[in-house]
Image 1 (cartoon, protein in one colour):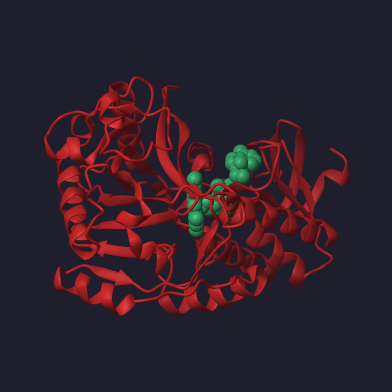
Image 2: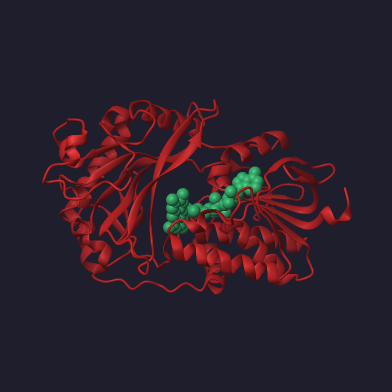
Length: 429
Ligand SMILES: Cc1cc2nc3c(=O)[nH]c(=O)nc-3n(C[C@H](O)[C@H](O)[C@H](O)COP(=O)(O)OP(=O)(O)OC[C@H]3O[C@@H](n4cnc5c(N)ncnc54)[C@H](O)[C@@H]3O)c2cc1C
């Protein structure tokens, strides 16, 4: 290996976790030789999906790893680089009071929203800034084995050596991360996951989004609203692969910016229940896979969608459910299979989510209109919890694991903050 393949710091993944680390390192020590590697042909992870950014604790900051004071300290640093334009909010006290009477909490969060197209523009800007600061970004390079003795990583494009390594492969890199933790002998658990549905309806049936872009309701029973998109909003599917190599899907949602001419006056958001597995401790990831595969089987290889009107009558949705005069908008995830989500969802999760939906309909009457669509499954398997050696997310000599894949974050700003924290660990050394 030539010396040109040696770097002071290598960062695997160009998502917000990796970017946060790269910016903090290079701004504090401009002579560092830094390499970022990304397996995709384009940068850069989850910044490109809708790109709404939350700047209030605890959104995106798992409580195991972040105190309020810590998160707020780092959020200030994140804000100073991302310079968000915060969205105004209206009528919050009205919604808060309605929620309170039901034992539901509405979190008042500082948010910005760029949209998927705005996120792409931001990514280009951020990468160009890093390259100007002499950070090397290599696309279409997939990290494989890590050898701690020689401090090298193998990739599909050759071997690189490092003094410090930050691994930030995101939720999709979950299996890669687990493989690395096994090979490096890092103890971890992954006992928590979120399972639920994505709701899609007309904005007129969920008008709160005109007052508050991504309203965060927390219901009793560990159910919450998550990732609300509106105005030019679309439900999408993400493809995953089980350990046995079988594909399955999780739904998600995003929106284009107001400037893009794709307005459909629809809104979508997730209703997620957090599941924490205890005795006998099982893998949350494996459980999520099995739920995903079960839905895939019943949906004929696609996510399942059901109209609220059909669900209430305990009947499956059929193609005809999506054609009557009552159903006044077309599903945006066109490939989904009309069916019965209650056949695929574990009863405890379904009951908790349906109860929360009814509470939401009391706070914002209309969301349970018969035309509202529920897509299943939406599964978040980001709960690898490596045993960290220090507060900088170090897991092995000079190796740090951060971001959604390592469970140090659950969103863009938390991932970015995790990157700064790992970078601080490196700078301290
Ligand atoms: C559809 C959708 C919408 C979302 N909307 C929002 C939102 O509006 N607001 C919000 O805060 N969060 C949102 N999220 C979540 C957000 O994207 C994540 O929280 C965030 O991106 C996590 O950052 P990360 O750096 O940990 O990982 P990622 O952003 O996933 O980045 C990891 C990167 O590592 C690369 N990688 C993986 N394995 C390897 C490997 N072996 N070698 C090299 N590269 C590798 C991946 O290709 C990826 O680019 C959304 C997610 C999705 C899927």
